[in-house]
Amino acid sequence: MDVQTLSALVADQMQAIAERDTQIAQQVAVITRHERTITEREARISVLTAEIARLRRAQFAARSEKMDPAQRALFEETMAADIAAVEAELEALQSPAADERTKDRPRQAPKRRPLPEDLERVTRYEPSACTCGRCGGELAPTGDHVSEKLSCKPLQFFVRRDVYPQYACRACETIAAVPVASTVIDRGIAAPDLLAQVLVAKYLDHLPLYRQEAICARRGIAISRSTLAEWLGACGVALQPLVGRMRDALLSLQALHADETPVGMLEPGRGKTHRSYLFAYRSGIGPSITVFDFCTSRSGQHARRFLGDYQGALMVDDYVGYKAMFAAGMAELGCWAHARRKFVDQHKASGSPIAREAIERIAVLYRIEAEAKRMSIDDRGAYRQNHAVPALQAIKTWLDDLRPQVAGNSGAANAIDYTLRRWPALAHYADDGAFPIDNNPIENGIRPIVLGRKNWLFAGSETVGQRAAAIMSLLATAKANGHEPQAWLTDGLTRLPTTKDRDIDTLLPLRNTP
Picture 1: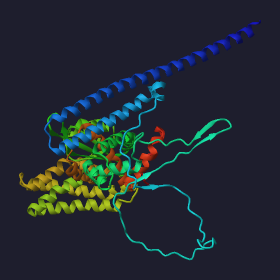
Picture 2: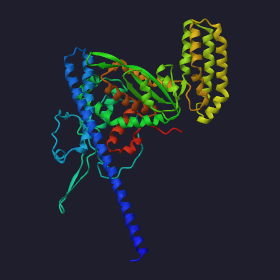
Picture 3: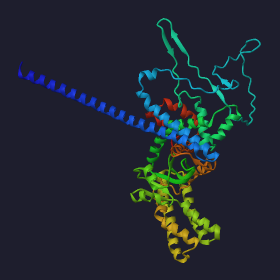
Picture 4: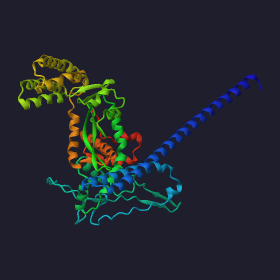
Protein backbone atom coordinates (compact mmCIF):
# COMPACT_ATOMS: atom_id res chain seq x y z
CA MET A 1 0.00 0.00 0.00
CA ASP A 2 1.56 3.29 -1.13
CA VAL A 3 1.72 6.44 0.97
CA GLN A 4 -1.02 8.26 -0.99
CA THR A 5 -3.52 5.45 -0.45
CA LEU A 6 -2.62 5.23 3.22
CA SER A 7 -3.10 8.98 3.64
CA ALA A 8 -6.54 8.83 2.00
CA LEU A 9 -7.54 5.96 4.30
CA VAL A 10 -6.38 7.86 7.38
CA ALA A 11 -8.33 10.95 6.23
CA ASP A 12 -11.50 8.88 5.77
CA GLN A 13 -11.08 7.41 9.24
CA MET A 14 -10.55 10.84 10.78
CA GLN A 15 -13.69 12.15 9.05
CA ALA A 16 -15.70 9.17 10.28
CA ILE A 17 -14.43 9.76 13.82
CA ALA A 18 -15.36 13.47 13.59
CA GLU A 19 -18.87 12.63 12.35
CA ARG A 20 -19.30 10.12 15.15
CA ASP A 21 -18.12 12.68 17.73
CA THR A 22 -20.65 15.16 16.32
CA GLN A 23 -23.45 12.60 16.58
CA ILE A 24 -22.44 11.76 20.15
CA ALA A 25 -22.44 15.46 21.08
CA GLN A 26 -25.89 15.91 19.56
CA GLN A 27 -27.23 12.89 21.43
CA VAL A 28 -25.71 14.16 24.70
CA ALA A 29 -27.38 17.54 24.12
CA VAL A 30 -30.74 15.86 23.49
CA ILE A 31 -30.37 13.73 26.61
CA THR A 32 -29.39 16.78 28.67
CA ARG A 33 -32.38 18.71 27.36
CA HIS A 34 -34.74 15.81 28.13
CA GLU A 35 -33.29 15.45 31.64
CA ARG A 36 -33.74 19.18 32.26
CA THR A 37 -37.34 19.00 31.03
CA ILE A 38 -38.05 16.04 33.30
CA THR A 39 -36.49 17.82 36.27
CA GLU A 40 -38.51 20.97 35.64
CA ARG A 41 -41.71 18.94 35.20
CA GLU A 42 -41.12 17.01 38.43
CA ALA A 43 -40.45 20.24 40.29
CA ARG A 44 -43.66 21.76 38.89
CA ILE A 45 -45.63 18.61 39.81
CA SER A 46 -44.31 18.90 43.37
CA VAL A 47 -45.35 22.56 43.55
CA LEU A 48 -48.83 21.84 42.19
CA THR A 49 -49.32 18.88 44.53
CA ALA A 50 -48.45 21.09 47.49
CA GLU A 51 -50.75 23.82 46.16
CA ILE A 52 -53.69 21.40 45.94
CA ALA A 53 -53.07 20.28 49.52
CA ARG A 54 -52.92 23.93 50.66
CA LEU A 55 -56.15 24.82 48.85
CA ARG A 56 -58.00 21.85 50.32
CA ARG A 57 -56.81 22.77 53.83
CA ALA A 58 -58.02 26.32 53.31
CA GLN A 59 -61.30 25.01 51.91
CA PHE A 60 -62.04 22.90 54.99
CA ALA A 61 -60.65 25.42 57.49
CA ALA A 62 -62.91 28.16 56.14
CA ARG A 63 -66.01 26.22 57.16
CA SER A 64 -65.44 27.28 60.76
CA GLU A 65 -65.02 30.97 59.89
CA LYS A 66 -67.75 33.55 60.18
CA MET A 67 -68.68 34.91 56.77
CA ASP A 68 -71.83 36.42 55.42
CA PRO A 69 -73.66 34.27 52.83
CA ALA A 70 -72.33 36.27 49.85
CA GLN A 71 -68.73 35.91 51.02
CA ARG A 72 -69.10 32.20 51.70
CA ALA A 73 -70.75 31.53 48.33
CA LEU A 74 -67.99 33.36 46.46
CA PHE A 75 -65.28 31.70 48.53
CA GLU A 76 -66.65 28.24 47.78
CA GLU A 77 -66.91 29.08 44.07
CA THR A 78 -63.37 30.37 43.82
CA MET A 79 -61.86 27.55 45.85
CA ALA A 80 -63.53 24.99 43.58
CA ALA A 81 -62.27 26.87 40.52
CA ASP A 82 -58.74 27.10 41.94
CA ILE A 83 -58.58 23.39 42.76
CA ALA A 84 -59.96 22.45 39.34
CA ALA A 85 -57.44 24.70 37.58
CA VAL A 86 -54.46 23.28 39.51
CA GLU A 87 -55.67 19.70 39.02
CA ALA A 88 -56.05 20.32 35.27
CA GLU A 89 -52.48 21.58 35.02
CA LEU A 90 -51.21 18.72 37.21
CA GLU A 91 -52.98 16.11 35.07
CA ALA A 92 -51.47 17.63 31.92
CA LEU A 93 -47.98 17.37 33.43
CA GLN A 94 -48.43 13.85 34.74
CA SER A 95 -50.00 12.33 31.62
CA PRO A 96 -46.70 11.94 29.65
CA ALA A 97 -45.09 10.14 32.61
CA ALA A 98 -47.99 7.81 33.37
CA ASP A 99 -47.01 4.15 33.15
CA GLU A 100 -48.76 1.77 30.80
CA ARG A 101 -50.75 0.05 33.54
CA THR A 102 -52.24 3.31 34.75
CA LYS A 103 -52.88 4.48 31.20
CA ASP A 104 -54.63 1.29 30.17
CA ARG A 105 -56.68 0.99 33.35
CA PRO A 106 -60.34 1.81 32.60
CA ARG A 107 -61.47 5.06 34.20
CA GLN A 108 -64.45 5.05 36.49
CA ALA A 109 -67.37 6.76 34.82
CA PRO A 110 -68.22 10.05 36.55
CA LYS A 111 -71.51 10.10 38.41
CA ARG A 112 -73.90 12.81 37.28
CA ARG A 113 -77.61 13.43 37.00
CA PRO A 114 -79.13 12.25 33.70
CA LEU A 115 -80.18 15.00 31.31
CA PRO A 116 -83.96 15.53 31.10
CA GLU A 117 -85.61 13.45 28.40
CA ASP A 118 -87.77 16.33 27.22
CA LEU A 119 -84.80 18.34 25.95
CA GLU A 120 -84.56 18.70 22.19
CA ARG A 121 -82.14 16.32 20.51
CA VAL A 122 -80.48 17.79 17.43
CA THR A 123 -79.39 15.42 14.68
CA ARG A 124 -77.66 16.42 11.43
CA TYR A 125 -79.29 15.20 8.23
CA GLU A 126 -79.40 15.95 4.49
CA PRO A 127 -82.41 17.86 3.13
CA SER A 128 -85.09 15.74 1.49
CA ALA A 129 -85.82 15.88 -2.26
CA CYS A 130 -88.27 18.51 -3.53
CA THR A 131 -91.06 16.23 -4.82
CA CYS A 132 -94.83 16.51 -4.76
CA GLY A 133 -96.44 14.68 -1.89
CA ARG A 134 -99.48 13.69 -4.05
CA CYS A 135 -98.05 12.52 -7.38
CA GLY A 136 -94.31 12.43 -6.78
CA GLY A 137 -93.58 14.98 -9.50
CA GLU A 138 -90.76 17.50 -9.24
CA LEU A 139 -91.71 20.81 -7.61
CA ALA A 140 -90.79 24.03 -9.41
CA PRO A 141 -90.24 27.31 -7.47
CA THR A 142 -92.94 29.92 -8.03
CA GLY A 143 -91.69 32.62 -5.68
CA ASP A 144 -91.27 33.29 -2.01
CA HIS A 145 -93.45 34.86 0.63
CA VAL A 146 -91.22 36.42 3.26
CA SER A 147 -92.46 37.66 6.62
CA GLU A 148 -89.81 38.98 9.03
CA LYS A 149 -90.56 39.71 12.67
CA LEU A 150 -88.14 40.40 15.51
CA SER A 151 -88.36 37.58 18.02
CA CYS A 152 -86.40 36.10 20.90
CA LYS A 153 -86.45 33.19 23.30
CA PRO A 154 -84.77 32.67 26.67
CA LEU A 155 -81.65 30.62 27.24
CA GLN A 156 -82.40 27.25 25.69
CA PHE A 157 -80.61 23.99 26.33
CA PHE A 158 -80.34 21.04 24.01
CA VAL A 159 -78.25 17.89 23.84
CA ARG A 160 -75.68 17.83 21.07
CA ARG A 161 -75.25 14.18 20.20
CA ASP A 162 -72.04 13.48 18.28
CA VAL A 163 -71.97 9.99 16.79
CA TYR A 164 -68.57 8.51 15.88
CA PRO A 165 -69.08 5.47 13.60
CA GLN A 166 -66.98 2.33 14.07
CA TYR A 167 -66.39 -0.23 11.34
CA ALA A 168 -64.84 -3.67 11.17
CA CYS A 169 -63.21 -5.49 8.27
CA ARG A 170 -64.22 -9.15 8.52
CA ALA A 171 -61.57 -10.24 6.06
CA CYS A 172 -58.55 -9.05 8.09
CA GLU A 173 -60.32 -8.43 11.43
CA THR A 174 -59.34 -4.73 11.48
CA ILE A 175 -61.31 -2.09 13.39
CA ALA A 176 -61.71 1.36 11.81
CA ALA A 177 -63.20 4.19 13.89
CA VAL A 178 -63.68 7.92 13.48
CA PRO A 179 -61.48 9.58 16.16
CA VAL A 180 -63.30 11.30 19.01
CA ALA A 181 -62.75 15.07 18.98
CA SER A 182 -60.68 16.49 21.85
CA THR A 183 -62.37 18.92 24.25
CA VAL A 184 -61.22 21.58 26.70
CA ILE A 185 -62.69 19.60 29.64
CA ASP A 186 -62.01 15.93 29.06
CA ARG A 187 -65.06 13.77 29.77
CA GLY A 188 -66.98 16.92 30.70
CA ILE A 189 -70.69 17.33 30.13
CA ALA A 190 -70.48 20.91 28.78
CA ALA A 191 -70.07 21.62 25.08
CA PRO A 192 -67.91 24.61 24.02
CA ASP A 193 -70.93 26.83 23.44
CA LEU A 194 -72.18 26.24 26.99
CA LEU A 195 -68.73 26.96 28.42
CA ALA A 196 -68.63 30.17 26.39
CA GLN A 197 -72.08 31.12 27.70
CA VAL A 198 -70.93 30.73 31.33
CA LEU A 199 -67.70 32.71 30.78
CA VAL A 200 -69.39 35.55 28.90
CA ALA A 201 -72.19 35.77 31.48
CA LYS A 202 -69.67 35.85 34.34
CA TYR A 203 -66.97 38.17 32.97
CA LEU A 204 -68.77 40.29 30.38
CA ASP A 205 -72.36 40.45 31.63
CA HIS A 206 -71.20 40.34 35.29
CA LEU A 207 -73.60 37.59 36.38
CA PRO A 208 -72.31 35.80 39.51
CA LEU A 209 -72.44 32.02 39.41
CA TYR A 210 -75.29 31.79 41.91
CA ARG A 211 -77.46 33.79 39.50
CA GLN A 212 -76.46 31.58 36.59
CA GLU A 213 -77.29 28.53 38.71
CA ALA A 214 -80.77 29.95 39.30
CA ILE A 215 -81.25 30.74 35.59
CA CYS A 216 -80.36 27.17 34.65
CA ALA A 217 -82.66 25.81 37.33
CA ARG A 218 -85.60 27.78 35.89
CA ARG A 219 -84.99 25.97 32.59
CA GLY A 220 -85.03 22.58 34.35
CA ILE A 221 -81.24 22.07 34.32
CA ALA A 222 -79.48 21.43 37.62
CA ILE A 223 -75.90 22.76 37.42
CA SER A 224 -74.35 23.56 40.78
CA ARG A 225 -72.18 26.58 41.43
CA SER A 226 -69.23 24.33 42.21
CA THR A 227 -69.54 22.71 38.78
CA LEU A 228 -69.76 26.12 37.08
CA ALA A 229 -66.70 27.21 39.06
CA GLU A 230 -64.76 24.14 37.96
CA TRP A 231 -65.59 24.95 34.33
CA LEU A 232 -64.26 28.49 34.84
CA GLY A 233 -61.04 27.14 36.33
CA ALA A 234 -60.41 24.62 33.56
CA CYS A 235 -61.20 27.14 30.80
CA GLY A 236 -58.98 29.75 32.43
CA VAL A 237 -56.00 27.37 32.33
CA ALA A 238 -56.72 26.32 28.75
CA LEU A 239 -57.03 29.93 27.50
CA GLN A 240 -53.87 31.19 29.20
CA PRO A 241 -51.57 30.59 26.16
CA LEU A 242 -53.76 32.96 24.10
CA VAL A 243 -53.35 35.72 26.68
CA GLY A 244 -49.58 35.19 26.67
CA ARG A 245 -49.46 35.64 22.90
CA MET A 246 -51.65 38.75 23.16
CA ARG A 247 -49.25 40.22 25.71
CA ASP A 248 -46.32 39.58 23.36
CA ALA A 249 -48.19 41.25 20.51
CA LEU A 250 -49.09 44.19 22.77
CA LEU A 251 -45.49 44.77 23.87
CA SER A 252 -44.30 44.83 20.26
CA LEU A 253 -46.24 48.04 19.59
CA GLN A 254 -44.77 51.54 19.64
CA ALA A 255 -47.17 53.11 22.15
CA LEU A 256 -49.41 51.75 24.92
CA HIS A 257 -52.09 53.01 27.32
CA ALA A 258 -51.96 52.03 30.99
CA ASP A 259 -54.31 52.56 33.93
CA GLU A 260 -55.45 50.74 37.04
CA THR A 261 -58.60 50.34 39.11
CA PRO A 262 -59.13 48.91 42.62
CA VAL A 263 -60.69 45.47 43.10
CA GLY A 264 -61.38 43.76 46.42
CA MET A 265 -59.83 40.36 47.15
CA LEU A 266 -61.16 38.11 49.90
CA GLU A 267 -58.81 37.13 52.72
CA PRO A 268 -60.19 33.78 53.97
CA GLY A 269 -58.15 33.79 57.18
CA ARG A 270 -59.68 37.10 58.29
CA GLY A 271 -63.08 37.01 56.61
CA LYS A 272 -62.39 40.47 55.16
CA THR A 273 -61.45 41.92 51.79
CA HIS A 274 -58.05 43.24 50.77
CA ARG A 275 -57.64 46.15 48.35
CA SER A 276 -56.10 44.76 45.16
CA TYR A 277 -55.78 46.35 41.73
CA LEU A 278 -56.51 45.46 38.14
CA PHE A 279 -53.87 47.01 35.89
CA ALA A 280 -55.05 47.54 32.33
CA TYR A 281 -52.87 47.89 29.22
CA ARG A 282 -54.19 48.74 25.77
CA SER A 283 -52.69 49.29 22.37
CA GLY A 284 -52.55 52.82 21.03
CA ILE A 285 -52.86 53.49 17.32
CA GLY A 286 -52.88 50.12 15.57
CA PRO A 287 -54.46 46.71 16.29
CA SER A 288 -56.88 46.76 19.23
CA ILE A 289 -55.45 44.71 22.11
CA THR A 290 -56.42 44.96 25.79
CA VAL A 291 -54.69 42.95 28.52
CA PHE A 292 -55.65 43.07 32.20
CA ASP A 293 -53.22 42.13 34.97
CA PHE A 294 -54.54 41.34 38.46
CA CYS A 295 -52.15 42.48 41.22
CA THR A 296 -52.34 42.39 45.00
CA SER A 297 -51.29 46.05 45.35
CA ARG A 298 -50.83 49.26 43.34
CA SER A 299 -47.05 49.07 43.56
CA GLY A 300 -45.13 50.14 40.48
CA GLN A 301 -43.26 46.83 40.57
CA HIS A 302 -46.31 45.16 39.02
CA ALA A 303 -46.18 47.47 36.00
CA ARG A 304 -42.41 46.91 35.70
CA ARG A 305 -42.91 43.15 35.83
CA PHE A 306 -45.61 43.21 33.14
CA LEU A 307 -43.82 45.60 30.78
CA GLY A 308 -40.38 44.07 31.26
CA ASP A 309 -37.85 45.70 28.94
CA TYR A 310 -40.48 47.50 26.86
CA GLN A 311 -38.92 50.62 25.32
CA GLY A 312 -41.90 52.24 23.61
CA ALA A 313 -44.05 55.11 24.84
CA LEU A 314 -46.55 54.71 27.70
CA MET A 315 -49.67 56.88 28.09
CA VAL A 316 -50.50 57.22 31.82
CA ASP A 317 -51.89 59.58 34.41
CA ASP A 318 -49.60 61.17 37.02
CA TYR A 319 -49.39 58.06 39.23
CA VAL A 320 -45.93 57.81 40.80
CA GLY A 321 -45.74 54.03 40.29
CA TYR A 322 -44.72 54.47 36.65
CA LYS A 323 -41.97 57.06 37.31
CA ALA A 324 -39.14 54.55 37.72
CA MET A 325 -39.70 53.21 34.20
CA PHE A 326 -39.63 56.71 32.73
CA ALA A 327 -36.40 57.44 34.58
CA ALA A 328 -34.94 54.29 32.99
CA GLY A 329 -35.66 55.53 29.46
CA MET A 330 -39.26 54.67 28.63
CA ALA A 331 -41.06 57.58 26.95
CA GLU A 332 -43.90 59.14 28.95
CA LEU A 333 -47.08 60.43 27.33
CA GLY A 334 -49.43 62.68 29.30
CA CYS A 335 -53.20 62.52 28.98
CA TRP A 336 -54.81 65.71 27.68
CA ALA A 337 -58.23 64.45 28.85
CA HIS A 338 -56.91 64.54 32.44
CA ALA A 339 -55.56 68.06 32.01
CA ARG A 340 -58.79 69.23 30.42
CA ARG A 341 -60.82 67.66 33.24
CA LYS A 342 -59.06 69.88 35.78
CA PHE A 343 -60.27 72.99 33.98
CA VAL A 344 -63.75 71.55 33.35
CA ASP A 345 -64.21 70.86 37.08
CA GLN A 346 -63.08 74.40 37.91
CA HIS A 347 -65.42 75.94 35.32
CA LYS A 348 -68.37 73.94 36.64
CA ALA A 349 -67.57 74.97 40.20
CA SER A 350 -67.02 78.70 39.68
CA GLY A 351 -67.63 79.63 36.06
CA SER A 352 -63.98 80.70 35.80
CA PRO A 353 -63.21 82.53 32.53
CA ILE A 354 -59.63 81.24 32.72
CA ALA A 355 -60.90 77.66 32.83
CA ARG A 356 -63.27 78.36 29.91
CA GLU A 357 -60.44 79.73 27.77
CA ALA A 358 -58.23 76.76 28.65
CA ILE A 359 -61.00 74.39 27.55
CA GLU A 360 -61.33 76.28 24.25
CA ARG A 361 -57.58 76.14 23.62
CA ILE A 362 -57.44 72.40 24.35
CA ALA A 363 -60.41 71.92 21.99
CA VAL A 364 -58.17 73.17 19.16
CA LEU A 365 -55.82 70.22 19.78
CA TYR A 366 -58.72 67.77 19.55
CA ARG A 367 -60.01 69.35 16.32
CA ILE A 368 -56.56 68.82 14.82
CA GLU A 369 -56.66 65.18 15.97
CA ALA A 370 -60.09 64.67 14.41
CA GLU A 371 -58.76 65.93 11.08
CA ALA A 372 -55.70 63.65 11.28
CA LYS A 373 -57.53 60.57 12.54
CA ARG A 374 -57.76 58.72 9.21
CA MET A 375 -54.25 59.62 8.04
CA SER A 376 -51.33 57.21 7.98
CA ILE A 377 -48.91 57.36 10.91
CA ASP A 378 -46.30 59.32 8.92
CA ASP A 379 -48.86 61.77 7.52
CA ARG A 380 -50.40 62.24 10.96
CA GLY A 381 -46.98 63.00 12.43
CA ALA A 382 -46.30 65.63 9.77
CA TYR A 383 -49.77 67.14 10.24
CA ARG A 384 -49.22 67.41 13.99
CA GLN A 385 -45.89 69.16 13.44
CA ASN A 386 -47.54 71.71 11.19
CA HIS A 387 -50.69 72.31 13.24
CA ALA A 388 -50.55 70.81 16.77
CA VAL A 389 -47.05 72.02 17.67
CA PRO A 390 -47.88 75.73 17.11
CA ALA A 391 -51.12 75.28 19.11
CA LEU A 392 -49.18 73.62 21.95
CA GLN A 393 -46.61 76.43 21.99
CA ALA A 394 -49.43 78.98 22.20
CA ILE A 395 -51.00 77.16 25.18
CA LYS A 396 -47.65 76.91 26.97
CA THR A 397 -46.88 80.61 26.48
CA TRP A 398 -50.36 81.59 27.66
CA LEU A 399 -50.11 79.44 30.81
CA ASP A 400 -46.60 80.72 31.65
CA ASP A 401 -47.75 84.34 31.34
CA LEU A 402 -51.00 83.69 33.24
CA ARG A 403 -49.65 81.76 36.22
CA PRO A 404 -48.16 84.73 38.17
CA GLN A 405 -51.51 86.52 37.94
CA VAL A 406 -53.55 83.67 39.52
CA ALA A 407 -53.91 83.20 43.29
CA GLY A 408 -51.76 80.30 44.47
CA ASN A 409 -54.51 78.46 46.37
CA SER A 410 -57.27 78.71 43.75
CA GLY A 411 -58.71 75.90 41.66
CA ALA A 412 -57.52 77.58 38.47
CA ALA A 413 -53.98 77.73 39.86
CA ASN A 414 -54.08 74.01 40.66
CA ALA A 415 -55.23 73.19 37.12
CA ILE A 416 -52.51 75.39 35.61
CA ASP A 417 -49.83 73.90 37.88
CA TYR A 418 -50.87 70.36 36.91
CA THR A 419 -50.69 71.17 33.21
CA LEU A 420 -47.29 72.92 33.46
CA ARG A 421 -45.85 70.17 35.67
CA ARG A 422 -46.95 67.54 33.14
CA TRP A 423 -46.08 69.63 30.09
CA PRO A 424 -43.19 67.55 28.65
CA ALA A 425 -45.38 64.42 28.77
CA LEU A 426 -48.46 66.28 27.49
CA ALA A 427 -46.63 67.77 24.50
CA HIS A 428 -44.76 64.56 23.60
CA TYR A 429 -47.68 63.09 21.63
CA ALA A 430 -47.06 65.59 18.81
CA ASP A 431 -43.58 64.13 18.16
CA ASP A 432 -44.88 60.95 16.52
CA GLY A 433 -47.99 60.04 14.56
CA ALA A 434 -48.23 56.73 16.44
CA PHE A 435 -48.69 58.38 19.85
CA PRO A 436 -52.21 58.93 21.28
CA ILE A 437 -53.36 62.29 22.62
CA ASP A 438 -55.13 60.97 25.71
CA ASN A 439 -55.84 57.89 27.80
CA ASN A 440 -59.56 57.68 27.04
CA PRO A 441 -59.37 54.27 25.27
CA ILE A 442 -58.09 52.48 28.36
CA GLU A 443 -60.51 54.34 30.64
CA ASN A 444 -63.34 53.13 28.41
CA GLY A 445 -61.93 49.62 28.72
CA ILE A 446 -61.90 49.81 32.51
CA ARG A 447 -65.43 51.21 32.79
CA PRO A 448 -67.14 47.77 32.44
CA ILE A 449 -64.91 46.49 35.26
CA VAL A 450 -66.26 49.20 37.54
CA LEU A 451 -69.78 48.03 36.66
CA GLY A 452 -68.77 44.43 37.33
CA ARG A 453 -67.46 45.28 40.79
CA LYS A 454 -71.00 46.17 41.85
CA ASN A 455 -72.10 42.64 40.99
CA TRP A 456 -69.27 40.33 41.96
CA LEU A 457 -67.97 42.70 44.69
CA PHE A 458 -64.54 41.06 45.11
CA ALA A 459 -62.25 38.29 43.86
CA GLY A 460 -62.02 35.17 45.96
CA SER A 461 -58.23 34.78 45.69
CA GLU A 462 -55.20 36.02 43.75
CA THR A 463 -55.40 33.01 41.43
CA VAL A 464 -59.06 33.72 40.67
CA GLY A 465 -58.24 37.38 40.04
CA GLN A 466 -55.49 36.46 37.59
CA ARG A 467 -57.74 34.00 35.79
CA ALA A 468 -60.55 36.55 35.59
CA ALA A 469 -58.10 39.13 34.21
CA ALA A 470 -57.01 36.70 31.49
CA ILE A 471 -60.55 35.87 30.39
CA MET A 472 -61.63 39.53 30.50
CA SER A 473 -58.60 40.39 28.35
CA LEU A 474 -59.74 38.01 25.62
CA LEU A 475 -63.36 39.15 25.74
CA ALA A 476 -62.46 42.86 25.74
CA THR A 477 -60.12 42.37 22.79
CA ALA A 478 -62.74 40.36 20.92
CA LYS A 479 -65.27 43.18 21.36
CA ALA A 480 -62.77 45.84 20.30
CA ASN A 481 -62.04 43.89 17.10
CA GLY A 482 -65.70 43.57 16.12
CA HIS A 483 -66.23 39.95 17.15
CA GLU A 484 -69.39 38.76 18.84
CA PRO A 485 -67.71 37.59 22.09
CA GLN A 486 -69.70 34.41 22.65
CA ALA A 487 -69.42 33.29 19.02
CA TRP A 488 -65.67 33.93 19.03
CA LEU A 489 -65.16 32.17 22.37
CA THR A 490 -67.23 29.17 21.26
CA ASP A 491 -65.09 28.81 18.16
CA GLY A 492 -61.89 29.25 20.18
CA LEU A 493 -62.83 26.65 22.81
CA THR A 494 -63.81 24.25 20.02
CA ARG A 495 -60.52 24.56 18.11
CA LEU A 496 -58.14 25.08 21.03
CA PRO A 497 -57.65 21.39 22.05
CA THR A 498 -56.44 20.44 18.53
CA THR A 499 -54.41 23.60 17.79
CA LYS A 500 -50.63 23.27 17.98
CA ASP A 501 -48.56 25.83 19.88
CA ARG A 502 -47.13 27.23 16.67
CA ASP A 503 -50.66 27.96 15.42
CA ILE A 504 -52.03 29.60 18.60
CA ASP A 505 -51.99 33.00 16.89
CA THR A 506 -54.80 31.81 14.59
CA LEU A 507 -57.10 31.71 17.64
CA LEU A 508 -56.43 35.27 18.81
CA PRO A 509 -59.41 37.68 18.56
CA LEU A 510 -57.50 40.15 16.36
CA ARG A 511 -58.22 41.65 13.00
CA ASN A 512 -55.68 43.01 10.55
CA THR A 513 -55.51 46.78 10.73
CA PRO A 514 -54.46 48.73 7.63
